[in-house]
Structures are given as structure tokens and as C-alpha cells.
Amino acid sequence: MIDNLLKRISNLYLFFGKITSLLNVVLVLLVVTDVLLRYYFLYSQAWLTELEWHVFALIFLLGATYTLQYDSHVRVDLFYNGLSKKTQTWINLVGTLVFLLPWCLIVIISSENYAHNSFLINETSADPGGLPYRFVIKYAILVSYVFLFFYGIVFICKSILVLRGKDISLFIETESK
Image (cartoon, rainbow, N blue to C red; front, side, top):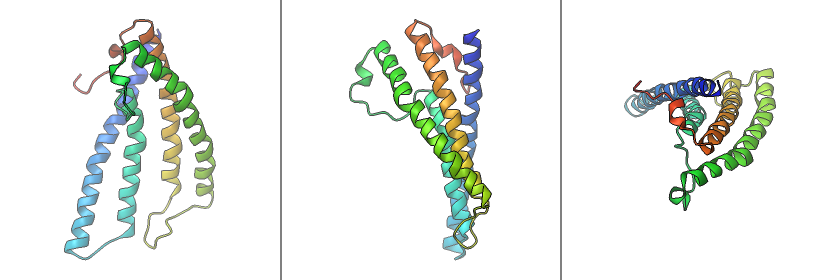
């Protein structure tokens, strides 16, 4: 039963990778448009530049969970690759418990007030012609860390299964399937 649940949850998080891929295309189109307008037509808008920043932030925020799912996140690797699979799994388990989950909780708790206050005052860009509804990107921080926290719990479950000798590659659908 837990195997089926982990597979379903992992496949749900695959959706974040698809959104992130789409957002990369959107970001490229925005940057190309901004460059063309700025250098060929001498025309620039603050909202376009801010939209680029917001899309980039969403790529980072949504891509974090997807990257963790495939164990492709950045790590300082001096010894890790030379260690046994069991030792690597223990490092992942302890790192998730000691660093990832507490950090997610800190960001969730602090960003909730940050986003809520932005919503209450209907915060907009400080730049003339900038984007309205600044609270939307601030709530994206909160939501993405909630998703990352819950995937951290899934990651812990998968680590425990690996330590028990289970092949977790069965829990992850790939793009080609």
C-alpha cells in the first residue's frame, strides 16, 4: 500500500517538472521580447522585466522539488560519489531530517506573514509601470516550500525503503512512459 502511495505522490511531483519546463520556454520568450524591444525599438517596460524575474523565481521554486525527486540537486560532493549506496542513503536521510525539513518549516512560517501582509496592503511594484499583486509571487514562495516539505517526507520514506533493500526506481514515472 505504501509503495502505491509513494508512486502516486512521486508522479504528482513530476507535474512540477513539466510546469518548470514550460516556464523555461516562457522565460526565453520574455527575455527575447524584452531584448528586441529595448535594443531595436528603444522601448522598455518595468512590468516586462519584473515578469522575467517572477518567472525565473517560479522556475527555481517549482524546480526544487522536481530536482530533489530525481536526486539531481546541487550537493558539495567531495566524498559522496565514492561512498556505498547505503551510506549515501543514510546521508540523504539525515540531511533531509536535519537540514531540509527544518529549513522548509522556517521558510513556511516566515513567508506566511510576509505574503499575507503583502496581500492585506495589496502590495504592488515600487517601480512606475511595474507589476501589481506582488503578493502572488510571495505566496508562490510559501506554496513551493510546503510542497518541498511534503516531498521531503516522501524522500525520507523512500530512503527508509532503500535501506530495507527496496528498489525505489519503480516509484518514479519517467517522461518517456
